[in-house]
Image (cartoon, rainbow, N blue to C red; front, side, top):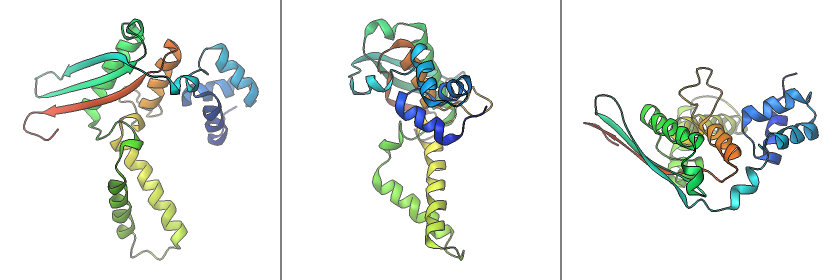
Length: 201
């Protein structure tokens, strides 16, 4: 059975596991939340949240240069130990993240990084776009928040759909969560810079 979005989010809250893993766990447990938690724990995917408070002081800085040498990315991805930084799973994640930045050109790492004044400006733009529509204020508020979600999914690396997943269902956040679970360490994107010949960064 397909799990509804509310149950998936509840399971995510409880375990810190990625969206796709939560969906699979709920499917395997016929929608039973407690059994789904147990399923994720057995797979080692339910510990990510516990690691959230730990410090990730190790990691790598990776450089990606697109063929033709007209586009490049520098990205810093952190983990807790040098041992994990050398694992295939971590190295592959770092390469995927660098390619994502090159292809999708995000402006921020996470939605929390978007300055308040930028969000307010976006809200103003969305409201002015709907100025001539005779809709109740609460409906307009809902539409504005929906447009902001779209903004996050375009401008924030962790919210973007993964370029290698044609279905568009996997977000970058899910990729990081998966490596977090596999390595049993806190893994996070610290910062990135994108350089393009003849264009802004």
